[in-house]
Length: 261
Image 1 (tube, one colour):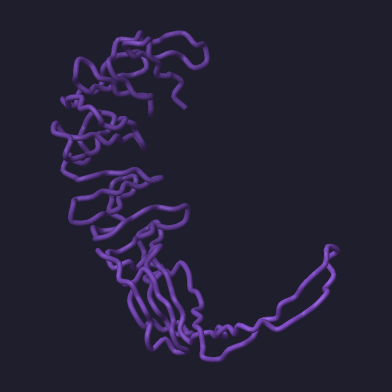
Image 2: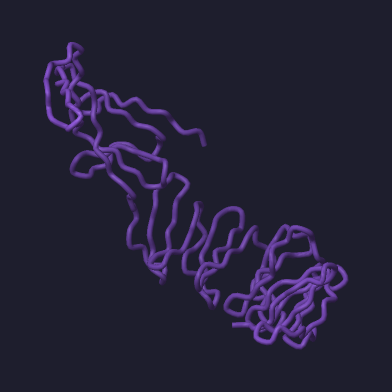
């Protein structure tokens, strides 16, 4: 709900009031970002600083502006800020204190959570920076209802917002597999007139193999990764394949293409 809008005069950036259109902070910064939680970051002579709605500098983290850095925006009164080399990231509060030191490979805000990466794994912190999900190898994202984890072996898990595991083997899809049997059938060829009325029927001279249903199923967890399971849900193979094709009734031989990792 911050009411100051960043604008440029063609050379420098400043801020105007979104309700009146009048400039509040004259354009004097080489780079400037949006206001969030009452503060905005600006490039002041090559250094990142945070100003309030009057233009007063309130936080000076002693961080140089580095081209390509993303906007410095506060979420839940904390802002992701890099170190002086822009190779590690931490969290600053609105008083300018490092509540998380800049020692992480990446930090992302997701709803009321923070996803942090220490290069060896990812972890989820809540809005008060308490650990919800400890560091683990894989990918993590937060949906409206769950914290979703995809492990390096392509297994998907779901946790509630308190970090309790509620599904240790989440499956996106299960599909039937068919195969071409030795049994043949002759398709019927039907001819129709312009009014859509059937005028003749004949049996095709070229037989076609009958498609039959295999006993096993293909399941998918992480999109694009597949394994085999029985019809009653018992896992036969891990999620190791990008393609599975049945060639007989019980999938004794499944032609698979392993995905390179």
